[in-house]
Length: 222
Image 1 (cartoon, one colour):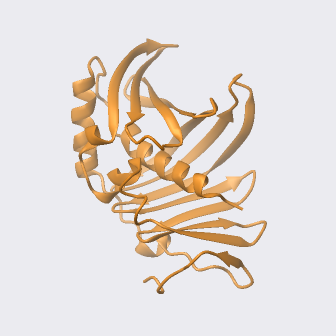
Image 2 (cartoon, helix red, strand yellow):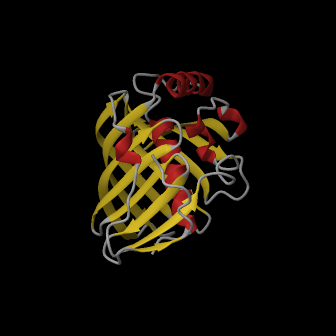
């Protein structure tokens, strides 16, 4: 089953998807340019759909997991990550709760978004544009043929110590998220669609018949 840490990781990555896609076509010679572009993106982009590939490396940079799937984001506070390989997993935020569905185990864990949301980097999804209150943004220069930007969460209990975004030309090439254990998560995106209509029903989750539900679902969502 999924743990609460998984929810926080997905929230964090969701925020960074917005941040990473904020920079297309922008020269990253100085951090203020990137910050200004991020502000504009968070103000103007309201929905996003994409495919993703995610690789997890241990502290010795040995691959320990690879997965792929699709994601959809609709501000405020709604996102959906569908892990298609190697195992089917679905994580849906409907604006009030997060539903974590392990397809193989037929088990759903439900958590609330309230309370912990304001204290996490996912506050960006709520519509706030106060990026500097939650992240330290820094131009990291060039490495391995890419231009890098760093985002460090100000939240002390974040599951990630740092995030690096690598750009090649006007395109995001790499997103690296380093956790407290030294593991590195690398994510790449493709077939990105921005600000196209996404039905609210995509972010509603109803446990399939026979599914074991853990947690309070609260009032029926609609």
